[in-house]
Length: 387
Image 1 (tube, one colour):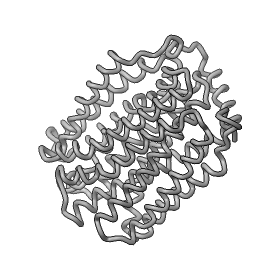
Image 2 (cartoon, one colour):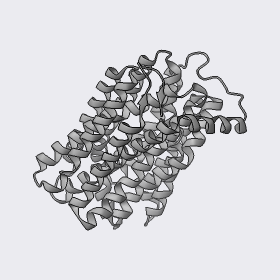
Image 3 (cartoon, one colour):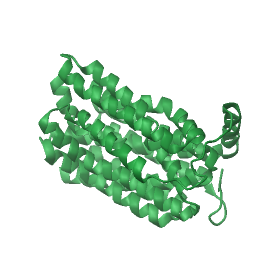
Image 4 (cartoon, helix red, strand yellow):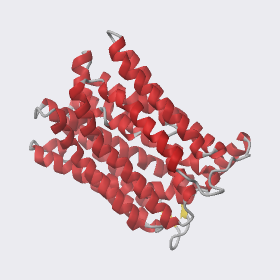
């Protein structure tokens, strides 16, 4: 799921030149994928709760691969492939809705101890961010072959993922059993969850959205400025884009290990990470030096990397297993809204003013910090999260 977006970001300027489209249209290649996922993620979450995690993930990855194949081959089949590329991306998004979002509750099913769950989720976020680190390098390298080559890599990667899930993913007995609950009863239980826990769940969803909104807004700007202003392209550009993502990856891994099952610590790490992101990105519009720009984005990525595992753990450990897949999927949907809106938003804002664009991003990160400060209220010790 990570590769399907981040791998394309370095080649967006190349796609613009090849298809003769503007940056807003190129950002739609990211956005339509995310929108398709957002719509279907709650459905995938319900199906995973009802029929089992693996039974949803495997077909979803096959659909994702088919979408990548359509996008890639359309460049060879059609003279004006932009519409078909978007169609393939929508198909990818449909498949992706049942892939990564279902992984998070699957980890919760595999472990009984909350500390083990937090460590597992930290590893998942690390794997997610390692994908982000490698994806711009891989995308830039594939872009040297052809601008559509990254699309064709997606079915290959999806096939590998399907094989690994079938062979190695083992959910403990009782963690992946078919649920007999009727949809009407399920929706009633879901409504009860939001009535009881909505006071902290909604802010967590907002924080997930903001983290990805800022992150993909940063990546979109960085990709454009490296190529248009500093004239970096190819693998070197991919390596430079990977630097902030490496900071995000390390921060996610360390945070996942350190927070354990301590929900009070999760609250304050999420708050500090959001605040760090806000303070750093606010300065982007005031600096010209590339080293400083890279340093700012690296600090911002560190803040995001600290916040995400905390949000994952708060949801996974605060929701019962029977509804965990759906709630985690809704959270993933909120994150994907950020992915969808970040690139076009930064594109539009940059058309007005560079300083304004990053002040807006910083402002959204401040909202995330305030949400953690005022709405996430863990109970005494490491008990349940309260509103």
